[in-house]
Image 1 (tube, rainbow, N blue to C red):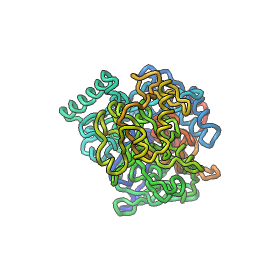
Image 2 (cartoon, one colour; image 1 turned 60 degrees about the vertical axis):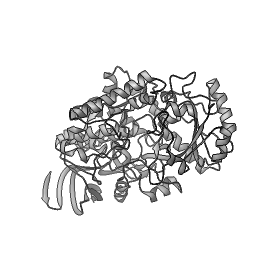
Image 3 (cartoon, one colour; image 1 turned 90 degrees about the vertical axis):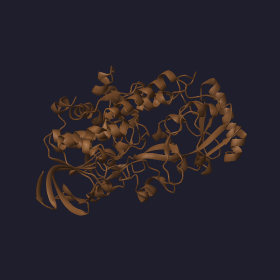
Length: 568
């Protein structure tokens, strides 16, 4: 990096955003580029730090090392089937091509130790090329103390525990079953609690999930000597002779011109918290309840379109059903809750409307499709019996047998009654008694004739294997019975700038804007309007960060046999 004046500097590669954009910075640094990261907020990590931290990258070396035998070719069959012949097809295929090399880069340049989440099924595992054993990986618990004086730079996780207990995605599933599978569930809880408390005694601070991934990436960035300017907002891109040559940023109130000789990588997230754009393209009069980073207001989209970029898939987000927030609070995501036996979900009339256990993006797409139709779902509810409440963790904070907080009742978020008829009267869910009676018949038989809940591998992953014949179905028989309001939340938007198979931003007509790249949620989803498996959102941020940086360095200039062999 060379400084030409107090207001202008020159770098090779400018990365805007410090979530998975840090992978782009590491890839650029390894390729010999001088890299600068700018981050609008005062915290590093973006939505990655708030997430579960998993990544879905088929055929990667972590799966191989853990005894799996996944292949990129089989995953290609899967993506070809679910993505189809769309504008995203080229992007999804290059994602597979460079995915394993991306993971190897992270293994070289960070101190993260990855593991395969064996059994975490692809979301559409029954489709050709799908995998019931899964392709999802995540970091093992990471000592955030390795960041030293930069420890407090990292954005705090949305699920931070009150005690040191680094819970991975695999841990979450098992701990959720601590009552019905105590040996496995309680054993895993004790193991993580021991690691957290033992680490603290040794001066270590173990974190898991998105906190671990973001911390590991940041640690790699710091050790590589890559500067990170926090509190620095993108103002505009600089375009010279149809090429993006840099950007103007606001650094703590001072405008700075950054000349980027090899390119600018936009990794600034989506438009999660831009209420105007969300009303226009997605939600209409529904509230914006995003769990994405608060800095995701669409700055990268605005700068890109000003430079001639096209936009795609603005109606899409990583939707997630959640418990309705209390006044002044945040929604609480529902993952395993929807799959576990002894529960069902209904619309405002009291009727079921979906396979409750389906992947969360598909859930949200169905809710919004119905909203646009003549038969909207309206208010959603999850209904369950006391045995369910006694058996499972709920909303990430209510441990088994813990009473539903009085504040939930006071806010009209929860209702409890001794019978289903009384619950229907209390909530106004007129058709609930008939719905529960029909559901109970299916649950007794172990087959959901209406929505096939529990028939797919992903449904069953978050079910209760101690219950049969269907781990996702059990009749609701003994009261008291509970109903809790559900809203449509999201983990961030996934529509954005149009890009090609090298992460280069293009116009609506497909013309490449030289010198400009977009990755992660700043770009339109590499899988179109589909979500192939847990961690595909973080995965594409990592992989396309690698691709964009290598392309900017001149290492992926042509699609030749030699280039393909280098990254096979």
